[in-house]
Image (cartoon, rainbow, N blue to C red; front, side):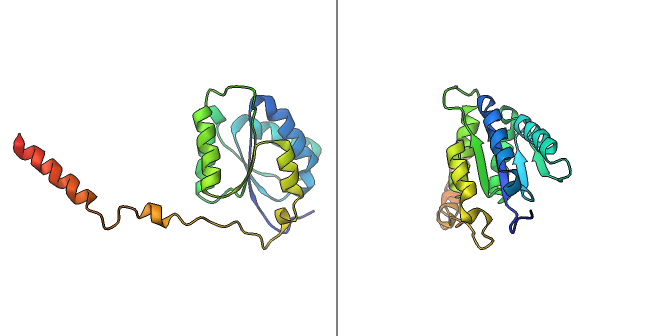
Length: 173
């Protein structure tokens, strides 16, 4: 079954949630065929192995990044900012402290900043993938306009003031 659209899908799971994400992907594998996947290292390796076992004749398009704590979360965030990821299914473990919690927070923040579809548990993932919008070729997420933020120093004398400050300090020496 060929999808009408090709989505960029990020798949990430904390250790205690990897089995749950693998089961979810296998359960929805027919809907997921034909999409492009970006996965953190261990999660992606396990999911791809399971998909190849279930569908040995299907070519899956997977980009396997580093393990989350070893930079994979940040690589995933980079793909989000570059516009390669439309959906992020990140099954988080709410009961375990993560040593790379700052990376996880940065990744989830970028999902919000870029307004991509994002979920952190199976129930929400079920609702997302069963939505008619998932396969609607006309659906496009809105892209926030951050030009006001990126141009906040435009027309302000910040550079001139910094140069003058350095020059004054040099003259005092």
